[in-house]
Length: 173
Image 1 (cartoon, rainbow, N blue to C red):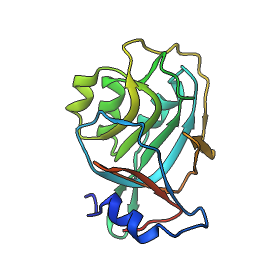
Image 2: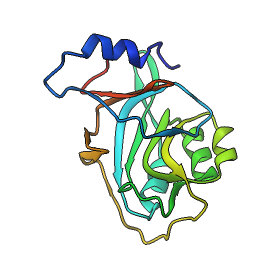
Image 3: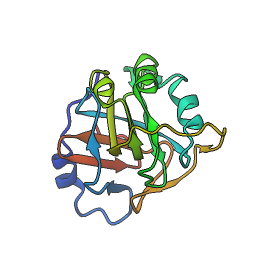
């Protein structure tokens, strides 16, 4: 279950943070998933026009067991901002939802937009692109990334809703 939050309220509460523990992603991402509001601890992947690492991630367990119950994780993908290939499509979106992921944020493209909209998963990306990736087995996981100039680290918490996306060094709600 997604906790109740509003990114505007989180920004109001943390607007004076100068430590870098609270960050806001720029408003360049479009909403493609069937879930508008999502949050969870971040898992990172860095890849460029090869979604092998994305596939491996979404086919793995996408949640953590906590004393309060299961908490879905959020996969953040540094696709280098490429608009030439889609890193996530309908099959991988369905796999992510099936495996308990709360959301996927891609600094790059998705495809199979109508399929993604029907999936119970939060999905944000720059654009849609029908061209798939080449599968070269390239990519890295679990490293700090810069997404649109904002640092994203494994274990950060990402909160997304209709107003935008924010990151925090720890859980806020």
